[in-house]
Length: 141
Image (cartoon, rainbow, N blue to C red; front, side, top):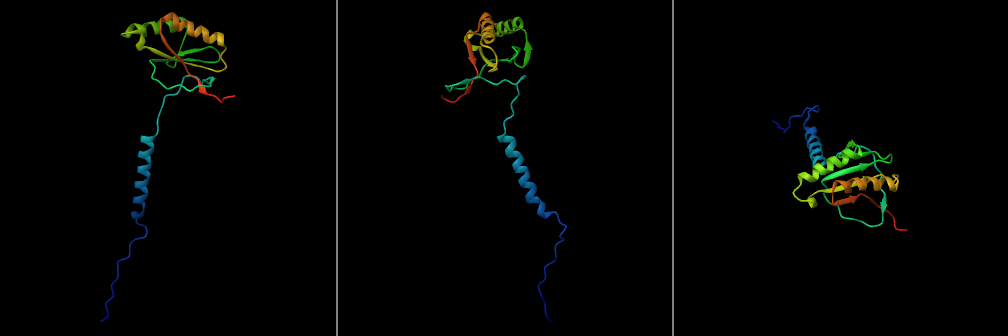
């Protein structure tokens, strides 16, 4: 009598081959969720002016966007010059010391300098001491 070792044949329609693929997809999903950084977008698109020097990034209490058409946005909400001064004064009043409050101004590169100076005067009128202007690294000529 001749005996042969036969292995039972597997069903070719089995989903066993999909398990490693599903594992890889979930690992990639977790990787991109952890590695990806989600940031809020600005109220308007602002192209920052160029600068030849690089500055270190700091955290700021409030951000003011100034569009090319001189529209001002305080933390992505459009404000008038008087309302800007009022909101900055209230923010300064809530702080323990004036040095705790810092403002980042994101002005469009197409904004005329005299309009930017008006915004800076409003910030000064509110009594803020720390003001930074956002720029992008330019090429040395």
